[in-house]
Image 1 (cartoon, rainbow over the protein chains, first blue to last red):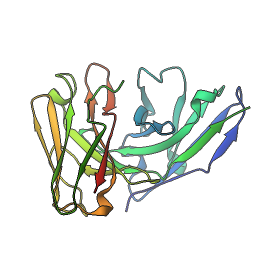
Image 2 (image 1 turned 90 degrees about the horizontal axis):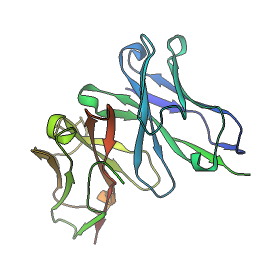
Image 3 (image 1 turned 180 degrees about the vertical axis):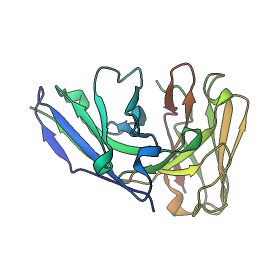
Image 4 (image 1 turned 120 degrees about the vertical axis):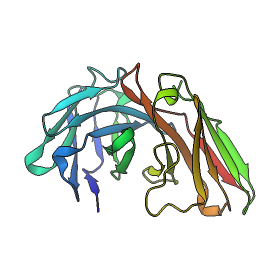
Length: 118
Length: 110
């Protein structure tokens, strides 16, 4: 069974950095794209980007290019999403997702709530 | 403003059927597979339909998907109160090189 287990909720101040993680199990981590989806409070889903762990090929949605960094560590089957300087507008739930064929998002993590407030 | 267009809400009585539409363009729905996701209150989304009309294991055949041109439709029959959720369509957009979603449709089972 595919499982994506995300790190816990975070409360940060504007300007701080942050890395959240997603540990995968139940499949060969290196051979599936793994990505991130943002859901702001009371809003819909927004795809941020994804990475192919085998060669670290990383693609970003135009809306998130330059705003975040996606990475993956094959040795521990873990993907990460990183901010260098958080803003209040980064407050949201973040889901890691496994990409299946046809770009379906066939497995979802439980979500990590990030709250940015002074 | 979402790239794909869905109605904000739909409703129907228990046991009835409901359809949710998803409209896009030639660069997304028109040339790529469509998926549908169900998000129950307070939970992560779950894949409901993929490749336009296929169901993952464990998804009942009360759920079905179809696609025609640049539009797709999700159908749910035999509605139950447990079907109350937000539903999202999603696909790849070849112009944006990104996964795009509809704005979501809230299903109420009256």
